Length: 343
Image 1 (cartoon, rainbow, N blue to C red):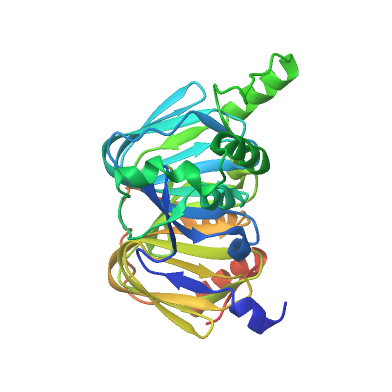
Image 2 (cartoon, one colour):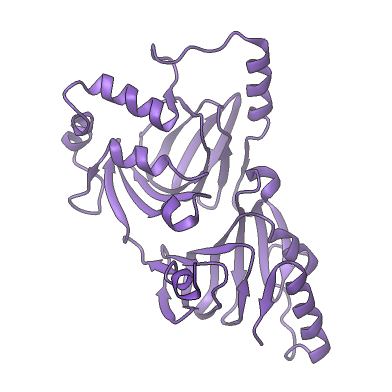
């Protein structure tokens, strides 16, 4: 793909933008699909009412992670129970039955599925949203009619195609084979949850970076880092190994991705493809963002250019700009990890 073709992969979606679907009694807004991410992940912004309960299910093809934006929820993943509130990250491995309930809502959360593909299942069993709100109750009861006249048979076909199984139905038979049971136990051990503020916290280039997931947890598909930064500019740079996505949680940020200028507030998602220079300016801050880097590996650059945070707050700010020697050291480290500083 030529440079122009790569740059055309860049895009930004403000809060509420994206493919909005009424799905299983909630509102699902598809922010990125495998088409945009090179099949490494898909990301869906989901709004669900209080009392909503996901059926106990498992995924055969992808891991499913959740980042809670609003509301309070309880997740059950294998034998583990995880209480989650805004800022919590929960990781559910493939082949492990899981479910969740919305205890206080409505709840809003990000579904992060890796590798991509599950968005096709969401589209197949949902309807285009008539408005970007929770659906009326009759809309959710009619969703099975979006397949064909034999809804149960059609759903079974879709389950098989997309590798998603509702546990406890006739279509699912728990395995009695010892080898498969041991494999599921190994997968279940990958499940974990981090509440707000949990994760490895690093003071990184004037900000606070909290590492939520690395390639070790995600099978190398992505790295997820929650970043808090003061008002100011990030230097223009380019990644040669990974794409970089940004989800704005707080603050107002202006991104420059190639020739595109993207204004982003809370709820915005911005995608910067590898090989395309990009930078951002925090206009109103401090800003809090999720950095989503795919494939994984960028966390090693963070470790190399940061120090353990003494507290989970912004570090003391330097009195002046870095020296040329410090900048040259940073440029060298960027090159070592497949990046390039353009200053």
